[in-house]
Length: 212
Image (tube, rainbow, N blue to C red; front, side):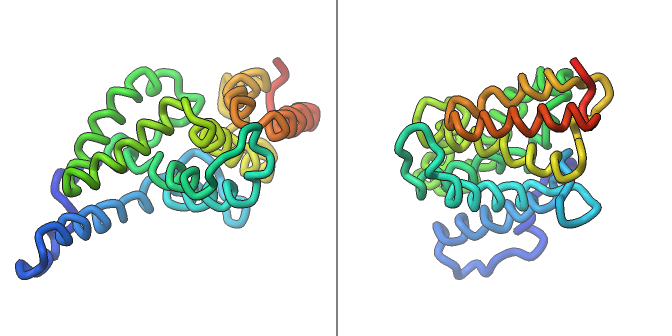
């Protein structure tokens, strides 16, 4: 993102507002930027790429719908919080396509800096709470985080299936590369991992992914 100012600075909030509320509203205005961050995945319903906000909404609905397939009991509400927060840092760090190995080298550094900047807009206690959710998702140490990550990898698979390959057709990417990137699904759901492998296998047979 090249714009270094906050969106709220363009139309300043009334000075009479409570300062804590102003910080919360400033953050909520700023995260409207998420709607502008394009991902590599195509939409199933339109001929364009999805944005991060659409992706996050889809993940939240997937958590609600597919929770019964989690290998461990999960708190659905908490898992939804994780998927809603997990990509906010891309407002400043940008999306890192799953098959872009060069960009992936700087991903953690870029996203850590983005997290510091974005969550720092909030009052300290609110910022710590959202940062803790982001860290939990990244670390995958809880059942909720593992299932949230599984959804994050399963969702684009469905979109690529509907696109008859989509990003599976990225130059140099093979069906085994796709399988490798989807292994993390198995940390949260054996059933969904098996379904993912079936979809990738069928996609390979149909010529939507390069044979390994």
